[in-house]
Image (tube, rainbow, N blue to C red; front, side):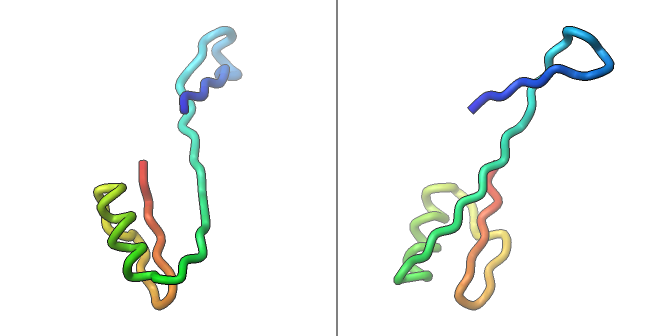
Length: 58
């Protein structure tokens, strides 16, 4: 997804704006889901906790 915004002090100049999307999923098998999403994203969870895993994907 590409988003652009106009910079307020530079008139008509446009710059790339990064979008951040957050999604929460409830899953029956946390360990299996962590393995699946680790393979999908190519990264381990940034904040693993009991019953919870947070992936920071850029």
